[in-house]
Image (cartoon, rainbow, N blue to C red; front, side, top):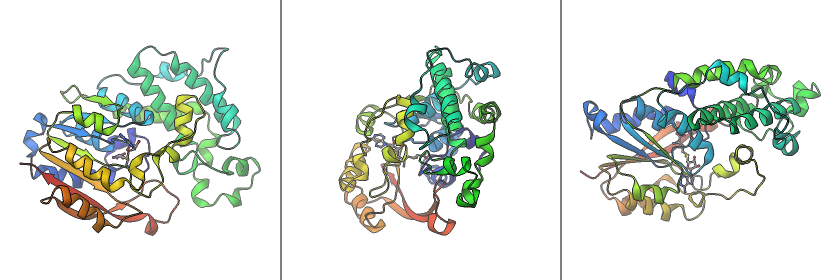
Length: 343
Ligand SMILES: C[S@@+](CC[C@H](N)C(=O)[O-])C[C@H]1O[C@@H](n2cnc3c(N)ncnc32)[C@H](O)[C@@H]1O
């Protein structure tokens, strides 16, 4: 794996492993020696893999996602090209004043976290809220997201019974893959934060451009964004909604309990929305779409794409989910990669 990807949080459906293939395709339409003068627009940047890869290739990047969890990543690693996390920043996370929040402890113990984790997360999030430097604040919030993922199995915060079984010393009930995270649950946060901060800092670099981070609905974003390449990786119809998968994380970041609202891209409107997306991206020279679905066949999606873009080059690619409890065999899926060249 490309070492700078280690700066990113694990992300459900993240496209790290597809990046070399995507950029190989792009090089056929825009030669690599022109990438320094090329702008890539990432409409659903999620965990930031494609945006970070494009930034490292020298492209100007406009990254967007509706979710706060993603905005934190792109503020910290795409728009930012010089601010890093230092030792003092990490130490400051432990200097909690008397008015620290108790949100995580009150709402997510014991269901999601142990008391000791919750207290640290509550205190540290209260501290980050007082950090005036906006980029530094986002870097520290990214650090805390990575901390939460470090102490939870499969980097998912919906670990039913996991902590209870650890506290009861019922390790036999955890299963092999879950026991991997047990050492992290025992570690002092400082040790995890120092190691993760080093990884995050390696993902901070300049590329000679003013790269941008946006948090808007994709259609509003695309109406404004100007560039050469548009990459679209919408949520998949029939798959678990991101808003459900990251429900706890989103509530912790927002400090409020609220019902989640699934993106319409997960719904039966998926095909119609995909067609609308393609219409909204006709102004870009090259459009690349990653697509898969548990509800519709790949052929149905290929037909939807061709109904708007008859000349689209569409091929299946193997894709392995980075997150999930399924065996390797089950997590290997076929997805579509569609490349549209508008000349
Ligand atoms: C498949 S993921 C993108 C993964 C990303 N390419 C990566 O490599 O990490 C889809 C993303 O779409 C975002 N999303 C859902 N509805 C959206 C909307 N209407 N506008 C913008 N982003 C949206 C979700 O928050 C999620 O992060």
